[in-house]
Length: 225
Image 1 (tube, one colour):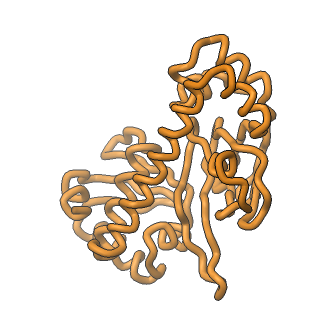
Image 2: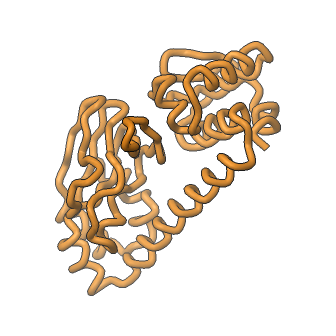
Image 3: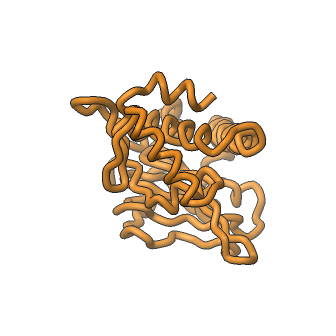
């Protein structure tokens, strides 16, 4: 297990070595191939998970079969923490979008550490607050932004977390299909494809297989507002 990735994660970064060791002793590794789910919407939850490598998408399915992506998460991020505070069934499905390695922590083990180290609770609440803030922003975007604006903002968010320098811009290996990208911004694939084609025509980005290269990040930022 890559302990250093976990040590840099927000939940662990400010913990003492003693508390960190107590938590990591209880972790179990989970390896997933692309398309495999660690849990599904409606399952009972008794663990939260940290991403060591790869990416996880959190999604929901409507009664008529339509899918919506809530978030795409990467190394150092955690998910499944809501069930720790609210033992209701899972409200989303967690699926690997690439080869992924997770570290699972049972709620009962985390509660033991919380009793002796209250700072862990503070970090968990901060993680929940961050997730809630991102959800609120997504809801506002659905009301106030058009589809090209939402696509631009989604690409910028993915670039902030997964981008790396390329010879002519920023390579964002998001690992998503065009359908999944459309689900992430809450639009049809055809409308998202049209927005991407417009960005390509304007010279703002280049499309690659499950990736984009952002060529003009300033123009993309302006379009996202």
